Each structure stands twice: as C-alpha cells, then as structure tokens.
Amino acid sequence: MSMKRYGAATTAEKSTRDCLDPWFFAMLNARRQLQPCCWHPPIGTLEVGASLNDLLEGPAMRELRRQLLTGELNEHCQKCPARSLATPAELRARLERSLAEEAASE
Ligand code: SF4
Picture 1 (cartoon, protein in one colour):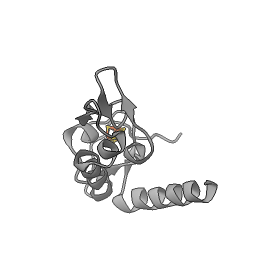
Picture 2 (cartoon, protein in one colour; picture 1 turned 60 degrees about the vertical axis):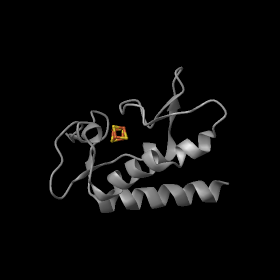
Picture 3 (cartoon, protein in one colour; picture 1 turned 135 degrees about the vertical axis):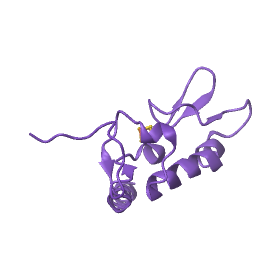
C-alpha cells in the first residue's frame, strides 16, 4: 500500500511540499484576507479600492512561491497536513507542466 507522508517532516532531499496552491488557488475570506490555501494563515488583506491582482502577485505571495520552489519552507508549510513531501526539482517540474497545460488550454 502506498503511503503519502502528509504532515511528515521534510528531509534534506524532500525539502518541500508537493503544493501548487499558491499558483492556482486563493481564498478571500469575509474579512478581505487572502489565504493561499485552506491551511495557511492569511498573507495579506485586500484594502478597499485595492487590486486583487496586486495582492496575488505581491511580495508575500511571491515569497511563499519562492519558499516552496527552494524548500525553504515557512513554519506553516513545514507542518502542512495536506500536501506530501517532494523535492524542489519535482515541484518545479510539476509547476512547469501545469503552467504549460494552462497556456495550451487558453
Ligand atoms: S500550508 Fe500546505 S497547502 Fe498551504 S501553501 Fe503551504 S504546503 Fe501548500
């Protein structure tokens, strides 16, 4: 039986999570706070009159993506109960495939 290791501690090789949420998913809660997934605390607040795109492409979201791609995870992603472990190379390859599929479907 295959056992995905959700919530397991990262290792030197598998230093990141198999997670593309910060590229393809976001939640805006009733307090106008942006969450990159169901597990991570909000990373910003959409101020009245501000651009959602600016928040989605802002420094906090870009830093979260960088952390996932390099395996320099913050404490929330380190303890993530929802995504299994991966190497940064595996995550980057999956991201590139997903972006290519998205571009081809447009
Ligand atoms: S907490 Fe988990 S699901 Fe959320 S961005 Fe981090 S790894 Fe992805």
